[in-house]
Amino acid sequence: MKAFENFRGLILPLDRANVDTDAIIPKQFLKSVSRTGFGEALFHDWRYLPDGNPDPQFVLNQEDYQNATILLARNNFGCGSSREHAVWAICQYGFRVVIAPWSGEGKHRIPGFADIFRNNSVKNGLLTIELSPENVEKIFQSIFQNPGLEATVHLEEQTVTLHVPQNQTFHFDIDPTVKARFLQGLDDIGITLKEEKCIAAFEKKHQTQFFPI
Picture 1 (cartoon, rainbow, N blue to C red):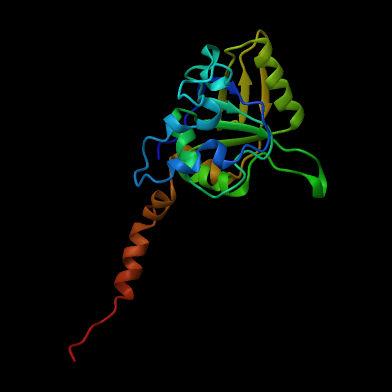
Picture 2: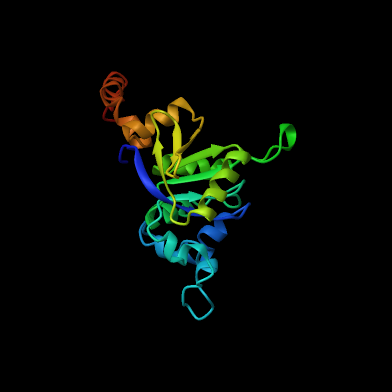
């Protein structure tokens, strides 16, 4: 996994809540045994008309948002099934960050992201940023007023800065362990390999002895 570096990218506004994984990557595309080629099927049922042509009304097909690398959505993004393919499709299309808000308070609070989707994102290098509903609404409104709006994501400082006439900066929280993984570019295998010497020493010490019968 590549280390996450600060970057500036175009924001795509997906103004929908409860976007489930079947909408992100429909079930008919899960037959592949390869982990490649899912980007073309991202949001397939929304993205394409019944005749297979791109739907010009869907935001992903609009000229202002071509080559976007930051996806802005509403709460409960990635709900539904646990398919990791949803994260693969988002990453392979070219998105590096997804931003979503929580909704409600207390026992009725709905997170910005479904837990399994968030965990799959960590494993695949997709940064999920949860902001307050008020701040996400501000970003949506800024995009609608300035199509083609870009932002800079600074992971070390945990900020998202909108490049409007007067820059707006929003701070986000992130688990320190997850932050370290992204900054160092470590997936689960990379974290394990950091302890390779200790693992080898343990195996050598506890090596099973086999004796002939």
